[in-house]
Image (cartoon, rainbow, N blue to C red; front, side):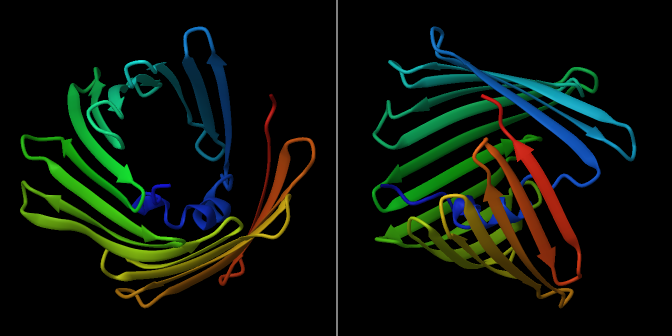
Length: 252
């Protein structure tokens, strides 16, 4: 099994601590599948209770499994349109290539992304090129694994300004119900996290970050309890005595 991508080294703890805590807003998401066409449809919307602003998007994804091709189209209420074509496991086993175009008819803004990912038993690499001007921004990452241990790095470079935009590295230990992570983000933020599934319905996690520039520390704990009806209740608390709670449910 291939290692996780660099952004997913601390995914379990990050999702537990950040996901579903939509303070001051209401969000809803609907997903459905059409087996005959091998397609997926997703619609999501949000409403900011303070400003009254609402936003929504619609996404349609269709797969051609015999050819390893996936087509994705997305439209936002801000009138932004995204189209992506991806090819996986055709040119080589474990290789995925994709091309994405973003267009805003109201403003005329255009951008494009070219993504390449390659993963095998002990390695997961990625190289992304984002074109907002004639000079791309490059983002690359690599993760290497041995048994349950993983280590990797991510580097971003702006070719127009000839400037390094990101430098992060970290290491993780992952087993079925336990995940540990420690790393440096953007060269100056030091983070560590832990995630543990205590039982089938109970999860707990801890996250600690220290900023080398502002010398500020953030410590937070979170827990999630899944109910039998498909709903879940979450709590989180940080070192500034901010307590958050959320309730989510899935209807199938």
